Image (cartoon, rainbow, N blue to C red; front, side, top):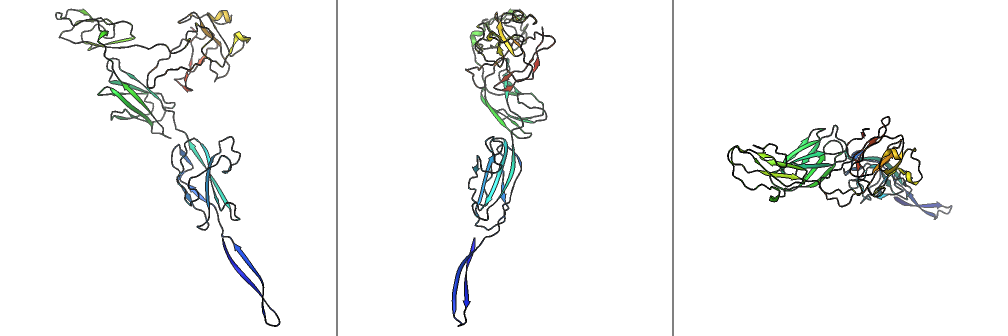
Length: 399
């Protein structure tokens, strides 16, 4: 703002100078809000540089702000609702902006707010989410625990490259559609394994992987023995395990048998690795306790809902008792089963349960027996864990 004072004089007939008025006149400098951004489309956590190209005096007031126009409570395209003022925005050039939530944002600049020279400008910036939701699991070789296979479970694999860091100094860039990678560790221990997508908007996931091997000499029941060359000797181990792997496999009838026959040609020291699946963490997984322990978007037919209506279910011993037009099927694991008349739309879950006492970075196996009871209209099944699809949807067989 600039100003100057004008003294108005009147000359009378007697040539006297008489002051008539003193007026203070204010003039305003022209201001035009204008700025550019380093990009109008960015990935999450990518800095956006703002360059102020406004026209105006150096002592103008610069007010930068930003908001998310995807917010349903925001009814104004400018920064008047749910506004976040940019830190140090009163300076001509604000610091870079970093968005941590995807969406479309307004960045607005107002010059000389509240004055006659107020002027504003807004630009939109689209903040993109990661190209894929990253996830992976791992499996130790039962015969060589230092040999670990990693499986890429990311939501999108086609056309995307990934970078693996196995935590032991080994890194690998995998080609698109590579589902598995193998790393051979030199020592047992805990390793931080990191997976990053290098195509599109990046993301990173890290897990601490225990590469361990527990030694239990009680598993082998056969004591050190002296035999003649090529004379067979049966090796015995404890039962109750899911898999067995004897090493070395030279001279063995079956290295994956619990009790193979050994016929070594030289003095040999045999060892064994075993694996065992833990206890079932699913409550009432065989439905022997009836209709408890789970939730469903389907309607329980025992509560007055017709069995002929889609989207109904029951827990019973056989499907034909519940619905006469359904095929007969056999139960697994108990004397009852969940029987459902499928919905005619996707998205509804028929069975859902929260599993507690989950140990991080531990492999779990989920299995179920599913059978379609209508050949003409077989069931389409999709398994989800924490809302994330595991594998592809599949068609349940009718036998």
